[in-house]
Image (cartoon, rainbow, N blue to C red):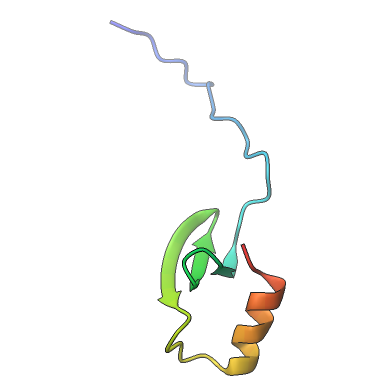
Length: 63
């Protein structure tokens, strides 16, 4: 039998926690993050969003 330590919390993330939509260069996809976890993916080719929005996300929020 092993005793659990109820106050042993996981370490805080060292970097910023991602929230929102980002452009992932390696996969050429727009990826939505919620509290640092992948939530939704959309391919850049055939993306229904406005071209201006796509260009801004690629420029400002590329990972």
